[in-house]
Amino acid sequence: MPGLSSSAPAASQNTAFRFANALAQTGDTEAAARDLADAIQTQLGDTPIDLACVFFSVHHVARAEVLASMLTEQLCPRLLIGCSGEGVISGAEELETAPAVTVWAAVLPGVGLDAFQSVFSPTQDQFQLSGWPPPGAGDTPILLFAD
Image (cartoon, rainbow, N blue to C red; front, side):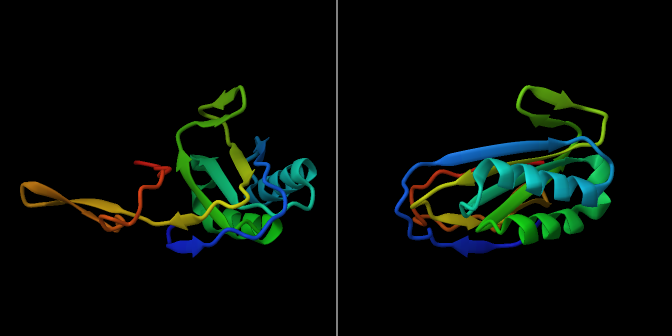
């Protein structure tokens, strides 16, 4: 789910942060996306979603773009981020070998969101980091998914 995006916070009267999560334990990517979107929408109602994080097992890697597209279309988050992993954790459940997809969604009134993708690559006897925000870009928290 590479790419860069930036999204200003939406004007909102409600200042309460709200969160929802859902887990689908199936190898059918499309069914998982539909079920997850339904579960998240049931928990959050019509409240616009600011951030959606999706984590999926290796069983869904080949269909990651479809998963991202369906979740974006159905949940309409300001920002969707995610990654694959050997295991998927959702709530108190940890699945290491079974197919699974989990979505964590957040309503974050007044919070600005920016996404970037950095690449860490070897160059001769050193390493180079590209894509990182420039110094002085602001003292803001970063949520990092590293591989």
